[in-house]
Image (tube, rainbow, N blue to C red; front, top):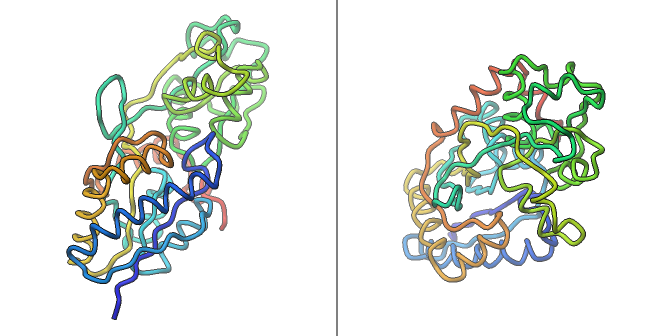
Length: 289
């Protein structure tokens, strides 16, 4: 019988890219991946599923077998708390601080006209507001909120308003327009905004106030019970990322990723620790699917 694998992703895997382009790029990667996989598993096929948000994505990978999902780090950790069947097997490589690596950072940033030179000063402002993206985002909420808490600033109660605005682009635009004093996001969010029409001066208008500890980058998660199949999948994923089609596809649909490296679930324990330190319940972060 043929061996059929399902490959899935979430719709906001990369901001500022049309859904059709993301889909096309994922399909291109799936094709390169299938070719590599068939070297060890002859006849294996890879089907790209429809994108779903993080909560239903977690349920989808838990309920199936031979499932492969491109996930965000916090989504994986929340999913693994529900089921130990989920395993992180590969991680996106990106250029961070001029070096190719498998970590990234979260940040809290503000408009240069805010007058802020430190996070502590935000508490004393009349316009005490902070913008997060979604509660199940590692860099759009969890780690920036933890940076505030470590400075004895409550991520909600010490601000006049604390809002979930929907994602990195929405937060960055709110800070740019000075509708929000502080914005939470990943380390490349200001650069991303500067590439959008009408926001070309974002790098001169927005500034970072604090950056988090390193965060393990976006993982590929599998639910594949058979160990031999799982090993074949991991090897094929990494090899596919090194092909011309694989490189082009990754850069297009996954935030300018440069490649894939093998990883393990234990690399993401730091995120579980962050949840505990923030003193939130996992079910409060992940909405019902």
